[in-house]
Length: 213
Image 1: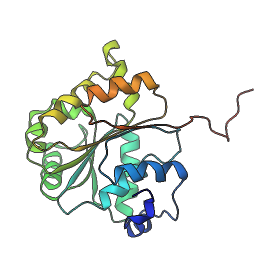
Image 2: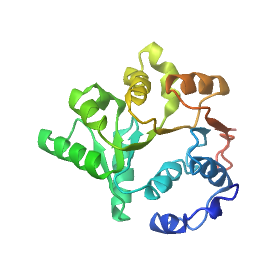
Image 3: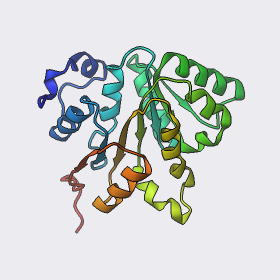
Image 4: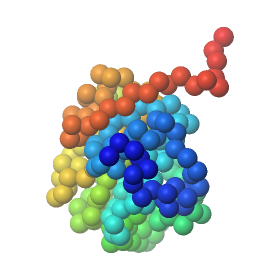
């Protein structure tokens, strides 16, 4: 199907407070809803989060979407906004108490939803073991331009996401997002994350509301 509105997405859009999709969002969602892996470069403010939040609302009960993000403040903002809209979402990070961390992990492994976490969480054996038993429907890697930089010592845990994906019993859908990666970066990212012939979207990063003079 080429028309995003051939899919039953209206209820999910309404729940997220979205009245219409931007052209770029429609193109990407059309591929995502056909279960394609995608690599997306879209400018900051272009609506990348909708591209994984909306599909998660269409999943079967119990299916889990993992969102790897490096920014705690962004995770907190998105989880807070999703909860206000009645969406099952939580974040898993080192600031949680041991009891709350374990309870959150157990809840989302058993019941699914949107679980936000930093890639460093994969270095915890309890997290890896629990996630290996979950119905991981989708793995989202945000700020994926970090991945080609790990050889220079920056956020090295990003390099471990690919091995985690490879370890899952059932290959998940993989969605990777950035506002800055180049076409050559995309080739490296696709290999590192073990993506299955991903559809690549390199939209312009030019923002009409910003001018340098």
